[in-house]
Length: 309
Length: 268
Image (cartoon, rainbow over all chains, first blue to last red; front, side):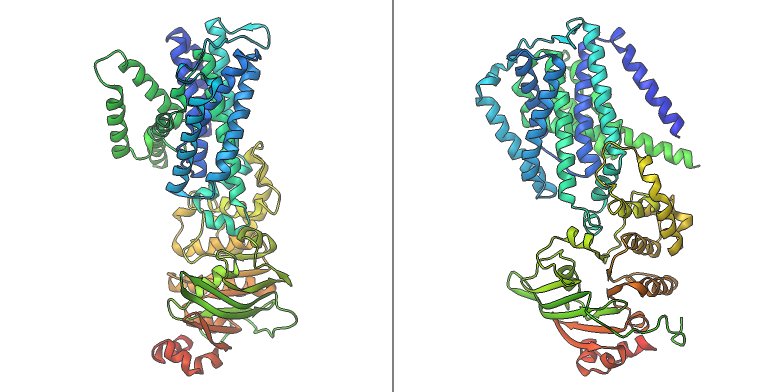
């Protein structure tokens, strides 16, 4: 099983390496940004059991921070991404401190309320330029010498950041810390009775998830050279939930597949007669009714049943 | 299982109590669930908390382990006042509880369940940058604990796939991984088959040898066999205290259990 897993991962990475020769690079890059966003969100929902309805604040917030720092302060793109991540982590710390005191639906509502407050801040704050957003964000030169205006350079930069981000999530999930997160998801009172201060674990997971969602948002602002109000709306928080559920919560690959599917659908339906939201909504309903575990979750369950025979 | 061979030697209490509660009271929106409960627990002692449904046993348990905050009263653990501490902190001090509904981590393997308990005392709780290989050095101890309770052959299974009785056993193994000074077991035999009851009773007798143990239990035969002292709770108050013989003669206790047959059956 470990062998086949490794082979599948290698195959996936290979497919992403050759993808820009077959597809429009910006399209694949936007997929990668959303895939990283969904994977970061899943760190919280799938592996800690916390449903945040405010992750757009980290994604869109970091996009503003990165865009502002590279455009106005003139910092190099790699530093811009780090600034975006740090900003998202700080936001995550503030939101997390307030939200983790509550559970279930109340947790989701607190995160939603706080992200709406952040949305209002973004609408009003001068540096975000309100409805216009931050336009014409320069991609700059990576490490001072790699020109990111060259499409393939940019693509491989995005792919590298994506892989590093996903590796970081995989590492967190499969670490001593990740084991405790899973035990909290499985049975919180029991984790407490074993002496774990679960509040601190949840907060740490929340901040990590926010920072990685921020990495995805910052990256997106460099890809599109644009940071927009759309990315901080509550609809964006909903979209990432949809992507994650569609792909399969609590699986490494699920959110990536889910994000890819949603972005591909949006892309292909944008030019057709069908209304995008109705089609994605219908697919989402079918998924929830037919494959409860999400696409990847069902595949894994099937492989296990098949494998055990 | 017969009464001819007692499961354990009764111990006399000696010295200072490890756990001592004084005047515990808990009110829920005007309703008094527990009033003026005081109890002491000594090293090497097994104490049972019994009483009819709704008597407040679980509430007392939650108060002692800090899952609930008492309205009034104090709790001391090894001479230290723990009345205001949070539950995780109390667990770290060595006062560890089990739950009425079996508390395992269902989607972790049996070995991982025990290992999670070992991680914190070994300082392996917060490392998010290390791989799972770093936990392998805990496996030997985890396997030892599993062997001790007879779960070796299930180490690699998901806890969710265990039978109910084995889940309870796993829970005890997980609790023992913390090497607690005081163990509080909330209905360890609830819903268990006859064979499992005997098995778990022996396990409890064994683990109680070098620690103090308080259990809520409905199976009076188990209580009679295992416990040095019994505290009977009714409507949130202690109505009787003492060894099994004393308690079972108490008319108030007989009445609380509605008819004498039940409690005598327990002994027979």
